[in-house]
Image (tube, rainbow, N blue to C red):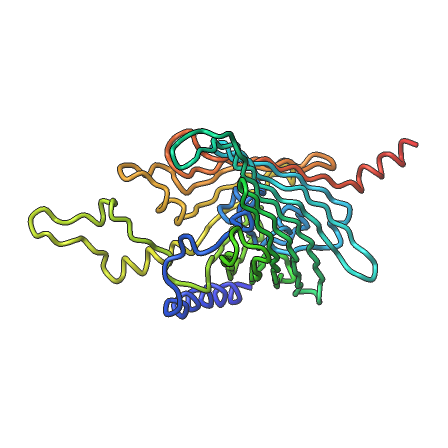
Length: 358
């Protein structure tokens, strides 16, 4: 198991080196940002936008369909997040059929709020809203003891005032789980698709494709599991040039712009791909979570003080048929940081109790 873990880390590191010849900075290179927003409190609590943990948690199956299992049959999940007036979340339900396999359907949304409309002279003419909506149908199958596969099909609608767009996308995923269930590794290709109807005639924008790898490693005698993600295997350079950054100012004496050394630049780029998290489970009832996302920290930190930007912390509570999750993610120092709320319900337990009551 530990050899597989070392091989996994080596593979994602090499893929980063290989992809360095292909892509540069990534800002503004795609539309439908809803497709890789973090909704689940558990995922946010471990710092990432998907997790490689196979324990029949339906909230992990939306971004990674290879985690859909028959044990999720008749499970329901609801998630909600509010950040600076932007609200987003999803409703998700899973069902298993004897011949067709296990499915999970979800409706995702982002509501950006209400805005003031004005013409080119500044005259206010009213208000308008901005919303994104996605319908996802996922399918997963266990191939054997160790390997499972899955796929998502998505229909995306976006409306910003008079501008509307429609798109389609698919995900493909594969998961390996060790016999003792302590090690899990996933490979995920997300958002392979295209706009069917662009916001403006003839102006087709790309959908934000991403190739990701993830792994988790649980300890044998301690209920502690570590999670590791490598985002954007398909591109290496995750940085951007900010002329206002203190790191890019000219030296007042020499007039030269400060530049990072080769090693520090490589380390900075590598860390922007990585997300690290840990989850401690207490008595199978309470889970404490902590995550670190270096990319978020670097891109959103104030110039004078980074604080605890990039850190996320949360917990999950399992009571009877309910699993409740909460996470607070710190983008920057201050009160404007997102709070994630998620609830999952095993409706099979409700049916059992209702039957027993009769």
